[in-house]
Length: 409
Picture 1: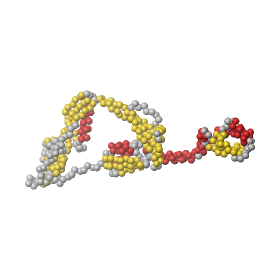
Picture 2 (picture 1 turned 45 degrees about the horizontal axis):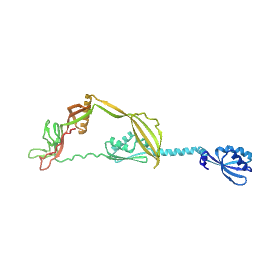
Picture 3 (picture 1 turned 120 degrees about the vertical axis):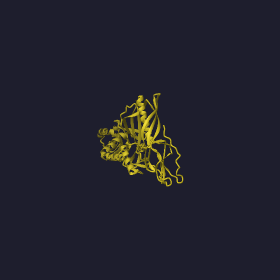
Picture 4 (picture 1 turned 180 degrees about the vertical axis):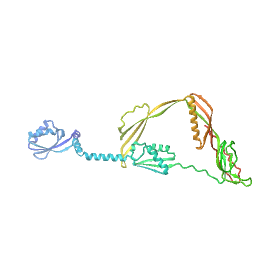
């Protein structure tokens, strides 16, 4: 039959009819418009056939008139299948709940392993991971992908040179390469201290050796500051000169700052949307409200779902929509100058050793052209200008000829 599949969905009943008036009964069904098929004879007074479930109630009237008995021996199709499911709904619900629980547990974080890190660095990494939301029991699809995690760890944990991030099943694996401490400067049994750059001596702390220069002296790169040869002229003894020679050095910086700038910033408002991907089909299940942001940036991450160790043809997609707004910033000339000086000061500090200090600053030149303030600033810096230089046996007066110029921008 052409409509056999349609009949299957609405329900099919197999009927057994017994009695002497079978032919008269079949004729009455036909005249009543009841569709029957697969009619089979099983003897003189027994036949079977199929009808649609919706026609079952129409069989009883003609059966009484034809003096036959009607029995229903089989029921198949959609309504009967759903009835059996409802009868066994407890078992079915338990099975579905078990599958859902296994899927949920298979897509959560159940372990974080960190290899190659010292205890202090590992503690710092775990603290940073906690701030990022990567903790035991967190659903994987709510977290950033491994590339973002790797980048944020490298940026925020200064002790790391490199970190590899890999998600295997329900466990995050981190392979860490820590920064190595810089090699300690080689020490010599006998050495001088010489100047690294042009400077004016402002303070001297000599632990070992003989001073060659005095406070307020101006020294050139490579000039001897503290000699490692001590004693009388004819009985000099070579020692390792040690100490701290603080000198005033000069750094020149060029800064340019516009009076008016326009830039994009995030307002802090964001919306998240989650959807289940089945092949090319995307089914949203969270975050249906449309955003009303005029300017926004959208970040999308996709997490493949798993059942135990098997990947399912399902994926969870998270879309994060962040509102972005345009901000105009205007400076007066005085504010721009102050801001430019602060930027130059910050830049100079990044170039200097940690123990160096800024003694003073002087604006050499300033101008305002095309809406931009341009400054030329000279900074006075107090820093240790001494470096060690080995005393070569047989050439005690040998000095370092290398020169180092002060930085400028």
